[in-house]
Image (cartoon, rainbow, N blue to C red; front, side, top):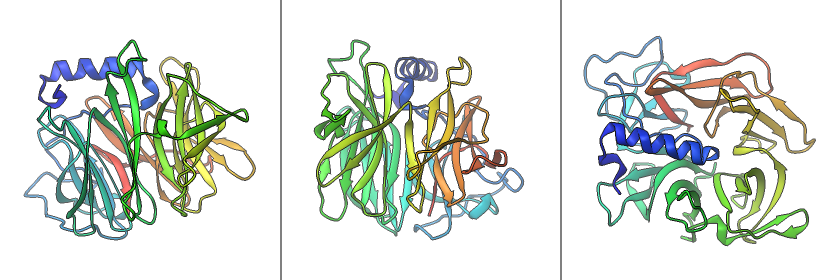
Amino acid sequence: MNVSALPARARVAILVVAVLLFGGVGTIYVLNARSEPAGSPRAASSAGPVPRETALGEGELLVVRAGPAQDSGEVLAVEPGGEGRPRSTGLRCKRFYAAAGTGLCLHVNATLVTPAEAIVLDRDLHEVRKVALAGLPSRARVSASGRMATWTFFVSGDSYLSVGFSTRAGILDTRTGTLVKSLEDFALVKDGHVYKATDLNYWGVTFAADDNRFYATVSSQGRTYLVQGDFAARKMRVLRENAECPSLSPDGTRVVYKKRTGGANDPWRLYALDLRSGRETALAEPANVDDQAAWLDDRTVMYSRLRGDSSDVWTVPADGSGRPALLLKDAYSPAAT
């Protein structure tokens, strides 16, 4: 089914059902965009055409435009700190991420033959690899070196789920061409033993600097877990319960993730885990955050927060201090290059 071609009311209905049935995946941004470009809340302006950006620069912030107009999904390049006028890359993606000259665009097609794709781009935004996929894009990440590209899709039709919804996380080694279509092909160790179940679902992958160690979320029997993986050995082990959508810090010492707090209205809060000490710190964001956070720098994380029929990118210190700050209006899927 081509979800993007459905009437707005039908798309919203599908989104609501999906999130309710499998909330751990995070919000699927089937959002249309506003007519004005995403940019600094102080400097954004809709006057005149948006300049074209034809390459992945360094020190820029890349986001996907959000809001209720037809230019939804446009990937924009913004100056650090959200200042200045955004520039269009000419790309349209449901999710986007970039690092070290490698871009990853998750795209939904208006066809049943190839309903969705993960498109790997080089520094000049030329396509270098395309992977045909199915479902709705949920998460996209590229390792700091630009080598490892990973994605999560919200899929349907898995027989083990009576409700028909699940997730599938894949990884592509852009250097060797090795493609892992699903992390379910890897071995999972829990409590010292290989754990096998028919309801395993993975999402939200983030890679370490060595391009081998990674972190992800797995769910089974109604519980979620943070796992650490070894790509070469094709195995993972459970680290702790109640941690979703991890994001590894640039220095590799901390993981920020969302965890359920039990509140009906605000089910997820952001936390940072020190991987050496095991100490967990609540970040100073009191609102519900249903996103895989990204690191703006070693001290600051950024993430999307829904606002009506749009979403905005916010930042908060990673050490639990300070308070949230609005970075970009009408945007999501941020990546600092």
